[in-house]
Image (cartoon, rainbow, N blue to C red):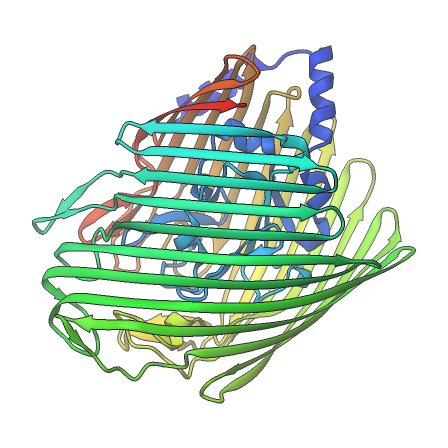
Length: 618
């Protein structure tokens, strides 16, 4: 492994070259990247994946980006889905992550975990990605999360073309993608279609074949008028084998998900805007087991059929006031969530169960003030008040208080400090409905106190960052295995964290990124520390990408010792001409990516495979 790291570093040095006129033109293009207009330094500790980064990484799905994020590990779930798990925590922990496409939050009301449904989301229509960790701005709206991921779509005026991309891999997967974008007068549109057949490595345990193969379809359309409105419509549909299922010896089964949404943003004069959203989500499970499925209401059942759905309606109004060095943002939001249990059968019989509250109304108001003491010092103060009320007439008032300070100490040093008092509200799957554990309608929100600091040093073509933080949680929402349900922990939970990263640009086309993180807490049920190494290189018409992701050993919540993981991937792109590119990517080459124990076998979220892709632009 040390030899591999040495080889990657040597490769970066060999590929570096002196600046040329072509490189200067590329530098100008880089300076015009869209993320320069959207990145919000005051919103938290931000990591940016630029258009160029995503292209060279061959990041075809959101999971390709998620697996590189510090403090998180990509893991496979029992039903074949994937999820992100925060360092030290288990898959049953409450660590909500929020995902936005532009200003629209992707719906996650049913499962309370949007990454389960959107991890395989195609990124062909995405320009760049911003990831905000350790407490983020209240102006992003909606309920708070532990991490926020902003996906920004491609700009039609820059694309003004039709592009298609087709991929096949060594496991038999097939992907077809297309993007059409045009700008005409004050109007523009962007359309994306993504169809894929996903094949994965099969496993066998307890005489059962475990498969998570499936198919996924995705559609996105945006129509805009400059400085007037944006209309966005999206839909996804996915069906795949249930893998290990909810029992111990699955025979057959599948998981089916569907999400449809529409989002309108209307812009007015004087920095006023209104956003309206409606979405419908459907989730279905069929599971058949040769032994038994652990269903709390009716034990020793061998078949489960269940279908649930969620409707979400949201309205936001936001106004900015800018006066000299001061910027004040005020906003209000109303959100209604309606949960429906359309079917719940075991062994073919309808079961009457006393479920929890199915309707939830949320009223939110927030304010954020950014004050520039001078051009080198910024103070951020924000507050948010959220009122929750469900159909059981249970209500609660939650709040977020946040303060930040950003200082440019000189031409080379930058300092960021954030303190936040926030909360995590229980989800439907914890309070209202679950197919395999008891629900708890009496759950209360948990309170979080977070303090983080980061020092950034930049000189010439090198940037170095180092950060520390502490998180304290009262009334934490945890899964109690003896009661088989989520409860509020009576003890305070806390952990500390550190991270360090370095990025060096040899020139505009060749750079290296190295990152390390570690978390300190009493018990660890997933990797406590990790590191990553990324190399971006260009030689003539070839682009090369090397990625090595390390995650430490850990002991699972079931007491199983898991080995450390090394996920090494390599990609190459050859530009035939201005219209055509050929791409080759090998993932998890060593077949040693971090694994998760499921029913006696160890599963990595990333399969060992080779992908061949061709892209053509009309």
